[in-house]
Structures are given as C-alpha cells and as structure tokens.
View 1 (tube, rainbow, N blue to C red):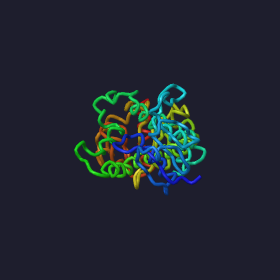
View 2 (cartoon, one colour):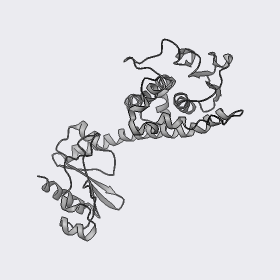
View 3 (cartoon, helix red, strand yellow):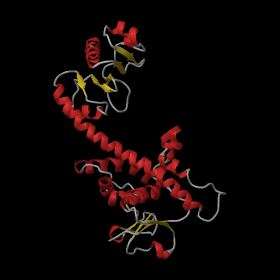
View 4 (cartoon, one colour):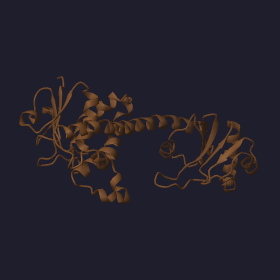
Length: 305
C-alpha cells in the first residue's frame, strides 16, 4: 500500500510526534504531513499512518496513539509514546534506509530504543521527571525541541504548523547523528577487535586511525592493554584507556614529567626525538612519526610498572 498522508494532531507539538515524523518522512518521503484533529483525518484509512492522535494503537490499521487506556507498554511495563510505537514498527526499516548493515540492525535498533527513544517515551507520559537531570534538566532533547514551539501570544493561522515544520529538520539532525554514531561504533568495534588480536600480549594497541576503542577493549576482556596509538593527520597520537565509561580515570596515566610539555621540552623530558605534545591531564601525547610514538608508548609502559 502506498502511504500518501502522515497524520498527527494539530496545535502545539511535543518531541514524540516530531521525532516520529523524522522516522516516517525518511521512509515515506512523498507522503504529506497533515496536522489535524478532524474526525475524518484521524480515522484509519487507506494510504494513512496516524500517530499521537486517534485514541487507538493498531499497527495493522496504521494508527499509533498512546493516550487511550490501557496505555501501550513495553514488556517491562514502561509506557510507549507515539515515538516508541513508531520506532517499534518502523525502526528497522528506518535503519535500512540509513544504510546500516543488516548484521547490525538488531543491536542498533535495541540500543537506540533504550538510549534515545525510551527517555522520550517516559518524559512524554510523565513517568520520568525532567528534574532528574539536575542542572541540565532544561537541556534535555525533549525540552529543547519544545522550545521551538511558538510562544503563547504568537498567534495566527498556520503558526503552529509552520513551527512544527521548522523544527522537523532540527529533530532529524539529532536522530540521524545518533544512528550514524551507533553505526560507526559498530564498524569501529570490528576494527578494534582485529587490532586486539594482532596486538597479542602487548600492552599497546595500534589502530589504523582514531576511533572509539574502549567498548571493544572491554568486550574483548583485554585488561592487559594500557595505551592506544594511531595516526592523527601527519602526526601520531598516544592515548590512555579509561577504566570505564563513567570515569575519566585511566588504567595508566602518561608520565607525570611529560605533563603540559611541547616540542624540545617534551623531547628532553621523554628522551624521544620527535615528541611534540603531552596534555596537562596526561591522557594524550602526540609525536611526529610512528617510530617516535611507539618509543613514547614503550617508555610510558615502563614508567607505570
């Protein structure tokens, strides 16, 4: 069946139907967005997908609302918003449309649902207070997207619809960036896993370029790894490995004597010709060649043992 209309409610908008529209307009780019509460529009019918309005959840009929009782819930009892319902139905097709490899579809679909979709669902249903974000409560994505609505006294025909359409590319940028980032992490994991195998028992992991590496290192159980080296433009970088995603504490720091030094001063302190820079916080150093960075890595390993 050809989808000709994507129907959601009129008036002010929230993050859930806006983000749902991101998914649906990617899959049905020729379909027209209709924002209405008219009974004829929000009733299921050929060529329509109806979401966040209509008081029913019936995927076969193409209607995805969550305001009725009982509220549609995940297996763990957490409520869906229209965004969650649309993602559940169309998320995998969206990932394919974003050129995510088939082998990564399920993992990315699940990860995006838990890390991006679920918080929106919970906030939209009042199951999660924005205040849990503390001082950053006003910076959450649902709150930021809703700031794009017209202010209370900005009235006139079509104002809400115009604001919705203006907000849509903003919401699209966040969704697409999140998906591309997750797909990139999956590609990086494959590369890092191969590099870990090649490194054997060495405490230094060499990668062909800068990329996310800590998740793969943890997944591989490569506890012996202390540092990572890789080319960075015309230079080479030496990085520490954080103990976990929730801390900046490293498995091993670069030598204290290198901290904050550059060029000749760093060459003298490290004893490595070609050493160019070491961050004050001792989590990254840079050298002008692979040979120099390999030597800096060896000396960093020796210094922490």
